[in-house]
Length: 362
Image (cartoon, rainbow, N blue to C red):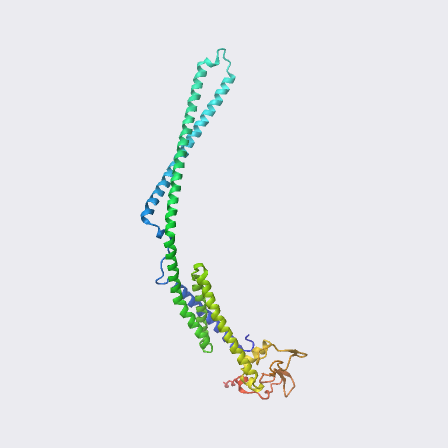
């Protein structure tokens, strides 16, 4: 793109882009800071803000009480479970010991009337009673836990009903909040975008264009990053409506620009070659030829046996000629022959770069 420029011009062009990007980055940072602390922006809303506080307070209090009671009852059940396990293990151990003792005893009297047998049986029965009592306590606690769980479920259903009743006012308030936030962002970004559009249309030839270009980049970023993501959806109507309006405006602008461009091309092609050549700027002509298009009509240059054709096959503009001194084939827009340095015949000020004055001797 920059090959037709002088070396300092390439450096300046690159430096100007750097200035534009740096300037845009600082503006974007400042804009993000301002938008992040947007004055007048409403605080974020939650569904709980619209739940009836008079009805919600008892439910929250009951919920907290039930949660505390559930934790205490669960701890009590854990302790009862340990007691039940200990009682069952004691009974099991005693039963196994008793069975082993009975199996190995060699009494001559009736084992059922043996006082020691009866004593051990009573001990075994008492351990069984303890185990049953521990099991009954565990069942009682499980029943309490079930009652607590049912009460919690009823509490949750009541809270869901309150939240469902608050859903309508909450959605309406959020709609208004989104609209307010969008309006504030639009009030900040739309003037920036309009000003950037005016700069692009009117100030592109200004010597301060690098700074203005940085502002344009900032305005585009602010619109598409700070505003567009916050477009209220509302079922997609607003977003799609904005997209349709932007598409129509852009389409009309492009159609008019294309018509204007085609009309200008037709007017230019009706001019003589000398008039067309005189209207072309030197750097622009070199850039277009370097890109393989005719500087006059901007169509592709046809290829011949020697490469690019001498004349444009579409508009007849001379593209290449021969030096009158050495006969070298050269670009017709070169003011001097690249082989012998002879000035081109018929060159004029509009297509010839300004001569560089010789430096004064020191």
